[in-house]
Every structure is written in structure tokens, then in C-alpha cells.
Image (tube, rainbow, N blue to C red; front, side, top):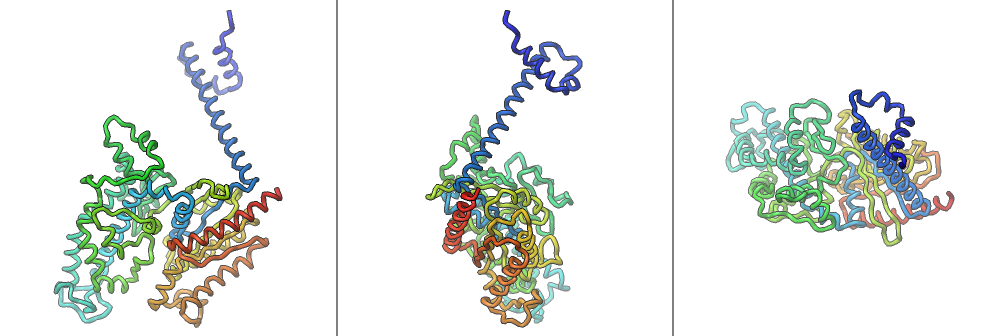
Length: 510
């Protein structure tokens, strides 16, 4: 009679693994024991197979890099520095069809951006009114008061009455934020969002993929996972009885996604209905003067669409590529993007990491095996305090981060690309008369012109590189605005040529 193969395998497993003796159930029957050990054997084989595949993929990636056929780029910079926008520019160049799949979900993100802008305006106006006593009295002549007669008509109403009425008219917008978040998150995550308001932690009740950041201006965030980008498609498929939504969604990969315009729950209906009121609010001169007085500059932030309301509140609005570049959704963690081989046969791998202080520890593991770093430093927030540290200027934080990158020993031979971003917002801010020397003392009495300020800021970053970098590695500096498609596309093409040449030279030396 042939030997029992299962028994032989089980005996071998038990001899190799001393934990079997400790962990096996006391009341286990021989049949149960055989089934358990067979399952453990299968699990071990699967684990070994997974390990083998991981090692094989890692070796293939190493071989590509040795042949100069893969370039790994790490995007670094503080929160809202423009990393995600630059990543989307890479996507437009290497995988433009991706936007067609994600467009319906990014439409919801843009709606969310509009809703949050409206909420911030109303909150700011209420705060201004709360600082003034007897707000129902006749309008005061004081130019600094919320009751200022600067463009005062407000249809003959007092500021308090006007704000209260607009708040009531725009009340459907209040519930729309949660509706959009729930659509992006998925039905199974709704309880996470509903319980968020009661938490006091830095991250309010995160499911691991999504959550809400706490603060005076709480912000919805997503983790590195592509599911939310196709959330509207998944939601629509879930409504089809008897169909596996995940399998159906996978089968549609690569196809342009569409919006169900007949869906009565689509947030676009409320955006369209409230469109005239949102436009009236943003167009009101008194509102704009109060926001300027309170230094609430929505135009300078990511996700600003109030100047495009006629188009965005239309009945069948779909985001353009430019809209997608400007859309704001906070990411927490590290996102990896692998783009198909370009015409030169090179595969590009981009890592986009969170820039908030609490997330910067996640940068270090990527320093050891990266071919280039693109560091983004926004120039426009020279007068803005860092969200995580109100005593620190955003520009100063970027300079400190740049110094850390230049002095890091793991990056000693890694080429650096410096993007001095948001130059368009810097120009507008200076044209509005904001004085740099008021916020950057070292600027002194230099002219408050764009050319002077831009060169001064650039010199600051250049000086840190010269003083702190001990190697002769190159640094390529570009003053730009990442939302400008034409300019950024040309810069990316130039950078890719330089990095590819450097990577090929490095590969030849290995």
C-alpha cells in the first residue's frame, strides 16, 4: 500500500514548526487535525508564492533601472504646494485617458470645492458681523466695519439681514457636502463620516481609506487608493440587482465613464438650483470687500472655482482637463503612479507623498531607492502661517524643508528639481499691494515688484543648496505655475530628458 502523502506532509510540518504543539486545539479529532494542517500547508504555499512574485517584480524593476528603462521620481513639498497638480500633469502627458474614467468623480470633488467656498464665505461674514454691536442699526460710515457703505445697497437691507437671508437661501448647500462625501466614500463608510463631528483627535474617525481632518476648517481627505476616483461608477453598478459591482467596474476599466443625468440624487441638481444665489453672493461688492478686510483670499487656495460658476452650475457640467488640474482633494499617505512606457521606451514611476507635518516621516523610506526628487515650494504664501504651526511662515517652512533635503545623506547623489510654484498667485498678490517686507523682514527696502521678489526668493533657495549640499549633483530650478498646462508640459518634457540622461549615465557606471 502506498504511503499516505498527507500524513507525511503533516509530520514534516509539525517537526519544522514547534508552534504546532502549542497552538493546536486540545479537543481536535484526527479528521479536524488533517483538515487544519492541510489548510495551513496550502496557506504556506500561497504565502511562498506571493513572496516569490514580490521578489520577481522587485528584480524586474531593478533590471529596468539598470538598463535605464525606468525612472522613479519622488514629489516632495508642504501641504498644498502643488504636488498632486504636478502628478496630474504627468498623467495628462502619459495617460490622458485616465481623466475620462475619473471625470464623473472629480466632478463631485469640484462641487465639493464650491460648497466649501460658499460655506467659508458665509462663516466669514457671520464672524465679521459678530464683532460689531447693534448690527441692525443703520449702516455705519466706518470703512473698516462690516456695515461699511462701500458698495452698500444690498437691495436696501442691512448686512445682518442680507447674510441671514443668503444663509437661508443657500441652506440646501449645507447638506450637500455630506452627500458628496458619502458618494465618494461609499455607503459602507457613511457611519464613519457621521460620527466625525464628535471626535477631538487630529484625524477624525478614519476608515483607513477616507476620513475628515479636524480643525477650524475641517477637510475631507482620501488615502492612496483609486477606488474613490471611480466611486460614482461603483455606486451606479451597486444599484443593478444581481450584478457584482466590483467585477463590473473592473470590466469597464479604460472606458470613459459617464454621468447618469436622470439620477434624482445627483448633487448637480442642487448645485444648479442654487447657482444663481451662489453667483449673486460672490458677485456682491460688499461681500468681496469684507473678505478682503478679513484677509480671506479664496482665489489663492486650491480648488477655487467661484469665477467659473456660470459653467460649473450648468445642468450637464463635466470638468475640463484644466478643471481637474485645479480640483482640490486632500490626500494622506503615499500614492504611487506607474505610467506606460513613453516613445523612448521608458517607464516612469511617480510617488506623491502627503506634505503635512504629521506625514513627513513617510518620506524617508523612499529616499533610498529613488532616481530624482522634484521639490515644490509655493512662492505666494509668504504672508500665510503654516496650518500646523501658526507661528511659522509657509515660505520659511519650505526653506527649512529644502535644507533638510539638501543635507540628507541618503540623497547625496540624487538629482534635484526645484519647482518654485504658484508664481501667478504671487504676481497677483503683489499687484494687489501686499508688501513682502511686512512678512519677510530680510527683504528690506527692495522694490515690491514681481521680478525683484521672484529673484530674491529664488536666491534664498539657491543659497541653501550651495551652502548645504556637499556633492556636485545638479539642481534644476523652474519658476512656474503647475496649473498652466502649456508651460508645465514643456518643463516636464525638459526635466524628463535630463533625468533620463542622468539615469542612463548612472546605469552605465553600475
